[in-house]
Image 1 (cartoon, rainbow, N blue to C red):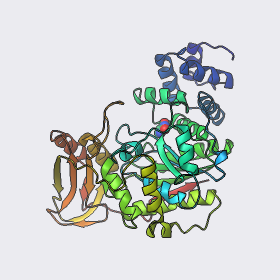
Image 2 (cartoon, rainbow, N blue to C red; image 1 turned 120 degrees about the vertical axis):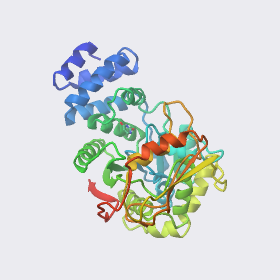
Image 3 (cartoon, protein in one colour; image 1 turned 45 degrees about the horizontal axis):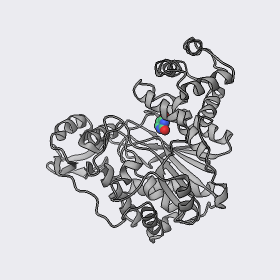
Length: 427
Ligand code: URA
């Protein structure tokens, strides 16, 4: 490998130059092996944040991250594989009903997921609210569950998958370089391409609770990721979906498991059901089953059967009740009228402060903490009606959660009903 000096590479990007494939390969390798220090990568990440990367650089950066670790191969399963990735939102529990629903149709769903950081929840934190459930599976266990088992697996990505991204993501998180399209796209797609799925649907969130605050930015991120996937031979589609208000009526780990089970039982909030069905249709179309009646599989209990098997195969008890928080606190409407705003970021931060998220990487989350939402935008309330209920194990957290909600709820303001949670699609 050609040798470079980290300072020259940082300077080049700082001054707006395009990095060569050799420079990029050296950088990712040097950072992963500790030759390039955190302080140098932090400076380079900020230079990329400020000056961007073109399509070729993003593709090479992604390839170098993939090459930092192992590639998985599901070819021996003898069935198509489909995966979904969300860029992260508030109340976004869609993976939980979606993975078993798609597996009903004989498509393997290897859902390698992460933990929450910041105000967005993590799929593994949610499932860990289920007593006994295990996130850490070996590659052999993943293959067995996908092949001879229920066909769906939601688990942690192993340490061998894109290790450069693990290091880089942790660094970006503390250097204000997360919300950068080239870095987000390469981070997500390196893991998905290394995982080796045949097809991928991306749920790119748009709005206050998402990294991308407007449709234009979200389209650019979606386009970048779809191109990276397609170039790597992964059939990739993105749906742009609304994250201006939380998804569903429950936010927080155990609470979101409860709501997912409601959806799998044929009920649940309409936005969660709509998005689950839309994403399932895209995944199944990519896997060669465009006419699958996913609505029916959700209503007639087939998806629930796979869910129960999936939880059991990973050591969990699907019948166990969710943990109950030690303290609750209700927020009531101060006026009568139509709820015109329920801000996703405000609710996400409030839930996080109640204990559903972690302030730093290694702290535990509370399984029972979170928020139940009794009124969503468009609902009519009367003065004194309960708008939401906080759940937490620590009473002192309530005050700070209330502060986070300030300005996030509005009754009687301008309200435009949304037609669908899906705003756009990029193929
Ligand atoms: N999720 C990721 O895995 N990486 C990012 O950069 C952002 C969201």
